[in-house]
Length: 123
Image: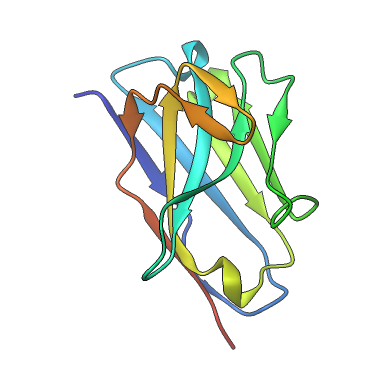
């Protein structure tokens, strides 16, 4: 079965950190640009990072730049999102996606989506 599986979501206090993982099964992540998206209640899904196939280029919107870091470990067929200095506005379901390329911080031509992992930032 071809799928992406996210993990690492949790309840964390403001200022805390989390690392999300996105693992692929049934296909090789190394052939895709990978992005993270999030969707908060009542809001549209938005891109929060994208890493290109080589891993040499990463992009972020201003809202998370300097706090979030995307990385990939092709040997483990996994992509990570390190999130630091979390704010209540970061509360959302986080999804990873495998696509053709990064259009800025958004993954284009998405072929696979994960099922999402909940991140809640609250005291």
